[in-house]
Image (cartoon, rainbow, N blue to C red; front, side, top):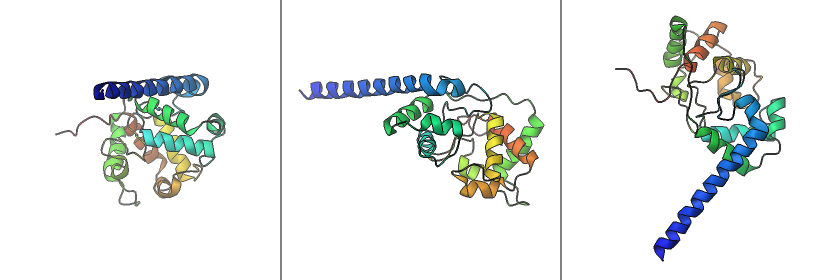
Length: 203
């Protein structure tokens, strides 16, 4: 009897998970795929890659878009009718997709970004990015994965933080991004675009 109850319970979990995936796929086809792609790979470098992004971060950002805490004409409109369970389903879906990365050709310029990311700039008071976003850009439950994100999107967000055009999560990021030069912004964006969060530290 206990085995039967356990089996039914596991079946129920499987059905619920399958239903969540189906729900997410439906919403992706209706709202998300034109900009973010069906697998979260993004159709253009101006849109963020969602594949492999941290689940809780996705939940927070979608709720912020829905509730108007993060401003974007397109995303505010797309998210305005999303229910909490739909947001969670989308976050589960995109976070489960394999994260992608870019091939970085300008190694010397990326090395400038690597230095800033690892050590910051003590002369202008910029802390190392890794202290919050992780050694390899993996982020945390509350902070975004930067590894493999589109260079253009990262540089646009850093600029928005610096100008306080980004309407959420800007308390700390404004103090950092406002001190970055254009060269530093572009170098950082290039470096993180080629990061793989799963790679191990070099010996």
